[in-house]
Image (cartoon, rainbow, N blue to C red; front, side):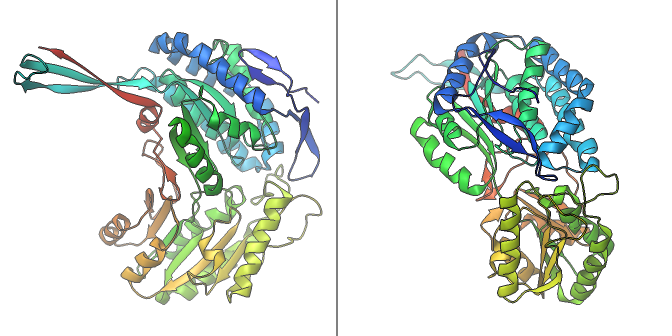
Length: 485
């Protein structure tokens, strides 16, 4: 077992709190021991990033771009070592791991290597100003510049540790910020490996720092620190609310991607095969552990029974089993605690009157690990906890509706507004409906992403946008400079 340490200011440092075990959710065995950072360690990392910030800010865009591209190349080279570690930490299946966990991280660093060279300043038209008691009149020119925020604390979730961290660190470094990484407690080891790769390709000491811990104390210390200018957090709404409140004391800039409860409206003219395939992504994609998943199927009554039957017949085809088996589709969820929360949500739906069409609790063929199989609850309504609360597991709930206005009302009657969907062969009607949905992102007849699109949520699903060039904007402050013409 490798001895993992924090990386603070270019130094490998033991966690002040000792270590804690990282558990493989498929086997319940120990993957490794992560350093337990204290609040003092967090403050030290923030100080190291602050000390490194002036020199990194002055680094040329070409140098930043070269380092980010070198990072992409090195991660790709080490993928054979990184992938088994990420799979062991997260429980990701072989299909999800090989297609996304490493390749998408590489893609993001390549994207922001190019982004580092992009001029995102804004030319301003000249302004004709009269003489005032303040200053002489004349033609006043100006430009809106994008300046780095400073020091960014990047706090990532457990579902895609390296990919999500790449989406934060890539644009932050490209625009001249230094970072302190704080991965989720469940799977931090690959992020420590990543920090070591940053060091190996030549990032200066203190530009990229990493702390890990099993408790919220070190993360809270980053939010409180005056040396941290911005928090980029992906995770639960509950934690996001705490960050929002605590960050106000030091006017932190915030980028918060929080919970989701994706509504998938299936109109009477929908291609049911497309709709069922889209909804099945809840089951087949990382065991439903993705905030953009279409977990609420809002279905016109004329096609309701056919859609439920289609999902019910498809569920047994999704094999539940060990993540390293090539034919496994549904692997474990991240922990025993998360499995118990998912099962509690399912039970609450049954108690509230939902029909349990497919029961994924205690799936056959697995005698250890934290597994929940594909689960389908039909005949639901918007008053049920299972419909209103994020589950973050392989559970679909189905709510019937009678007309478009009712469908939109049901979809919008939610605390969340991250990612919704409309399935309809009348694309004009679907587009009009999409514009009425209170969600930061809407997919029409697809569960696919466009990674250049601005990504983020309405309501309790977050604050701010990233993705593509919007990621560059997210990690910069606007500065206006004016002069006499």
